[in-house]
Length: 395
Image (cartoon, rainbow, N blue to C red):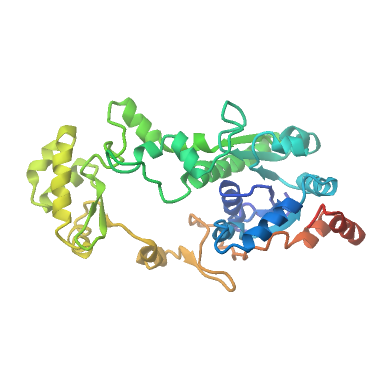
């Protein structure tokens, strides 16, 4: 850590990020939004270059391109980590960093010479974070996977969708972002705080599967208390008539969240069915009440329910689509979406903090686009930089 900047709590901290997809980039983006300097090491191997060339010849072949926003505020260098010169640069950058993030399969970083124990010898203050699908130990440690696999083995998919139907995908990267990136960021911040006391870094082992299980804490608690836990049948998966989604006549949807008894009573009275009130926790009555509620909500358009029930305070809202959230008056009031030149629309740093100044969002650099500046700061001379590029270690 070097100098500091008022309002940016992580200013002066450097994060070296070797991760490729989802959780690692999102984690480093969060840290960068709070002022940390983010240096990304992209894959500069010849095999990677061939893959990118092949992908560029196929329209819409690379679904990761829209996720480049996660590299905002980051500087990037492309290294071939299997080349001695690429490894040399990575080691020097690691020695000047506070945080090291990698998302290789377990054992890969060690084989490259960039494992935790190896770097710890040279840099005992380094906070080293490994993010993997199933963690660094156990029978699944070597398995490959993506978000769909982690939410499946974490138990989440068993709870999403309609009763009797197929599991429904959650619609976003739950394991990557909520199960992986957020716990990683919290752990990194905690490790940096602890380092101020001990003077030592530490190793962080993030498992995306474990992160998903952690998100199921409410459902696990309900199941242990005797409540039904199943797809479309449990309290939080659509089984309760007072906590589910209903279709409206104009093919939109309302979300009802009347959990507390007084809110449920308000809802029942607003729908002219006070006899439902006494059956709020009677699971045997839930299917019949749900069917009747569905029929009632299906009789009017979304705007009708918004006008009549949103002001009544029964925890009923419309279900927003992407166009709705961009035009949402609450989000626009809070400045959730920012724009920049040449930046497209982006989500600002979250959450709001009273003493954290808004950081200007820097557009993502192209892969390897900041190599010369990064190498110069790392102490490589002009001749050395030329040699590194000629050797193929830096691309």
